[in-house]
Amino acid sequence: MKRLFGYPQNSRWALVQACVLIACIAFIDWKNVVNVYFGFLYAFPMLLIGTALTGWQIAFIALFCSVLAELFDPFPWEPAHSFPQDILLFVALFGVGLFSRQVAVNRRLEVNARRKVENEAVARREAEEQLEFLIQTSPVAILVMSADGEILNANSAAHYLFRLGVGELVGRSISHYVGALSRVPSTEDSSQTFRTEMQCRGKRDNGDVFLANVFFSTYRTAMGPRLAAIVVDISEDLRDRAEYGFEQLMTGSRILMGAVSHEVRNVCSAIAVIYENLARTKAFASDKDFEALGSLVEALKKIASLELRKSTDRFEAKIVDLAEILDEARIVLEPFCSESDITMNWNVPENLPSVWADRHSFLQVLLNLTKNSQRALESRDIRNVEISVAVEHGIVSITHCDNGAGIASTEKLFEPLQKGSDASGLGLFLSRAFMRSLGGDLRYVPRDEGCCFLIELAIAETASDANQGGECKDAMH
Image (cartoon, rainbow, N blue to C red; front, side, top):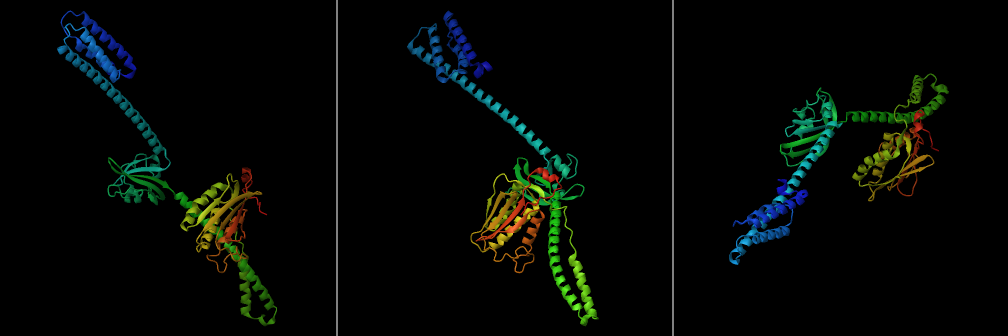
């Protein structure tokens, strides 16, 4: 069959066979003494010729074979009969050659197509194996469900998340574990497809509840609608946020209570002076109410003199990557500004050094300054906020400026509970207290237009500084 249909690498061998056959037929026809016509035998070499040559070459060989057949024909040549016979022979031989050529071409196309399909099948199997390996070794839970919520496939991380043995999730309903997924409309009930995420409650097989972040999508297959979901347990993140929020609240409360205690102590000291002056007069010497007032003043002085112990196990300065926390600040602040039609510009140089800071406290300070800018820019048609970073003399300076109306009086800018404050009057007070507790500072920078604040952070020169008790070197002047 390979000789018949002529693969390209066998074309030369096919031509050699065809030539030998033509020579043999011509020799037999030449030596034949019997009046028998052998021209039809040239059809066999033409089958081989068609597998190796092009159309015009086949026509030339067919013409050559027709001449040989007529040359060795035992019957005399008569134009009336021999000419039509030669034409028919040529057409027949040429047709056989073309047929053979087309069969060979189709055969080659079929072989190439089959080889391509086989290669694609191998590549598909390799891709499926890689995808299956990726899914099974993924640290996040991946599930595939039918339209009615039946779990069709689940990786090992999903079994671990829901506290089941490998393979036990298949065939169960997702409503028992992530009820919100069972309420997602399938493509069978709705033409709309979903590719989104949500946070919801998840439940393990033993009844434990956790907070889940779910990324899911719906799609249609030949076997019906499908729902694919990635489930991530974010309970630890929720606990960390709650714990950190509580610690930050307590730290802010301690700072605030310290300020209030200081003011109360000043008032009590003034009252105590007046009380002592009044006590020197004999008019109140035997007055019981005056004595009770003195006891009350002493009690207030004791309460005001109580120093709230500062917590050092949280919010202590650490060596942090400034570029990284500025990127996190952009993620938090840019959507916030976009909602208020505020254009935010960042002038941040490359290769920023590490600094002594606390990631969350620093973000809180930037967020507080941006909120203040938002309130100041509400009446402006053009709203701009610019954050710039400069490094000099062992200090990183971060300026936060806006084009608002500015601040009329800055004498009591960082004092708590200011009269006439737009908000609670605690934001700048707590922000500066946070920065100073980290070895940095927050200052107001006067300018002709708008409002500008400067955050200063000490540069962590070497990583070995982190092993010296974790204490921040105060580089501020």
